Length: 118
Image: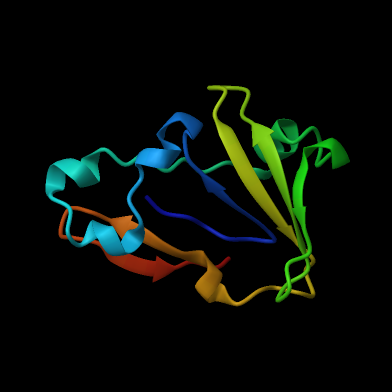
């Protein structure tokens, strides 16, 4: 699993698996078979995100303006496989603390944590 952040950051997971995904601190205790059950990461381009959120329509807003960084979170559904996504849209002058984007990037040798920014 991994993530990339840009002016529009996002996080994706299949909604039917949400409750089965272990918290990151639990992954160190998991065996390889448990790690393989995690959903694969899928990267979406800006056009796919616009289509999924109906061009960032207000009807798709699920959260606005966190305390530490002004942002808007949209829900969306991808056209190609009907997967649900969340898209976090930041003001370009209010880029948040990069620690918000801590992600697990590799499971083969155990969990590996990294932060990506573009």
